[in-house]
Image (cartoon, rainbow, N blue to C red; front, side, top):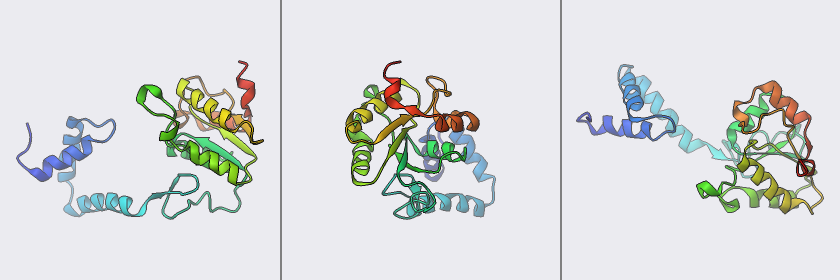
Length: 205
């Protein structure tokens, strides 16, 4: 049963459109917001307006940014010629929390998954290839989830770049098969970055 208010029901619909939030949870959240001072509700809404207006994706690595290039790409102390390839923004955050990687990133925005209709052209692989060819990239660290789709994406990128001379490595398998980076503890993830291995070594396993 819906509340006879377009504003209320629209708020419920918008919240329930978020991953992991169903209609009942959205309803409880909206009711909770209604019990807060109206100024708090306005601040809550304004934060998302500012998000839409001020947040972009870095034109170089596709990490979140408030300008054309993110703080990592603009940081002169980061190693320019080592690029860590990740699936999403959460993976960058997870790796940054380890304090073990001082290079740059490339956020693919997904991984190849035929079952979900996601092909190479649907993510930032072409941009990665162009970046490697146009810059002085010496090493790519493939830090994708250790799933079938992640491994397939690793192999596709490896085939596209194996003749360019760039070193392609992958994080060590201290991370369990099927695990996603964002849920891996910082110590294990940090060691996996440090103890990375040449990608071609994994092809014989």
